[in-house]
Image (tube, rainbow, N blue to C red):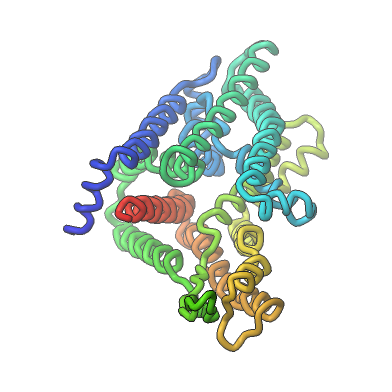
Length: 423
């Protein structure tokens, strides 16, 4: 406790670190204010009825930071930006030029990669905005508004999404932590008072054992996320002894820490953003007059409502995205080259190709465990919902996973900043 208070004191006494923390808090306040400003023409009663009949909108509400529940300017949230990031990450596999830009061109390449991602976000935001505005108009949520009013609403929603993306990038650059993850985190935390009040009003004494079970599962999820996030597989490395001008250097031993979960919570966010498409498309197509489109929409909604099939696809996506994101962000070949250039080697393993293969083998093994863990944690709430019939906890597990992962990431970033200042 003493150590924690000492670190907290340093955070608020160090001028540079204090500015970073206050900057994040200020932008989160702006974000919450934007989430409370609705677009013109919203019928509050019909909106509430529509949201109550569409449980999947709870997932969208998480990505929008609570903005969807009020049809605010940022109702799309960071969804378009996340989708854009997924597309760009996929292109790194298909295009060697984009892969080189992302992995080999250093900071300049990363900035160019991010700039392209922002441009791709614009058409995605326009498509999602048009889909939502048309869907809400058909449901009567926006009332009888003119074509000009619809275009104005689409423009406002797209601008709000781009503004939120900009705020997220400002947090990443001038604050502490990942801006997009912090926005999602803030949206989840902001909904906690509402969720707690609803739970208190609908509390059933006969279901106390079930509530205790959910509480225990939640505690286990938190413990599991912390353990797996912090777990690492050390690979021993020895630097060759070198003699230059009578001076001896090297000969030291260290290790490379390979994390069991290299990708953090990103695979969960990627999988959720992909699985939102059949939900949105199914709801939209089911309102069309064409029989074929209505049938397709009904099929998509059946897939979404089939908990076991949906959970299986969800698990597969999380599993694949874990491997995919690890492959994009961690290159064993580059690590092996760097070790060889610096005169370092893994004991018992030849430098070069053999080192690369060994690191890739170890990475694949530990990523397998991390991918299975993330997949199980992601679908566990859905399975519990199917067994117990309680729908309010279906999103809770995913939200809990995101919250814990973001908190751990922030703690690590703060500790890194504190270590830099101590040195």
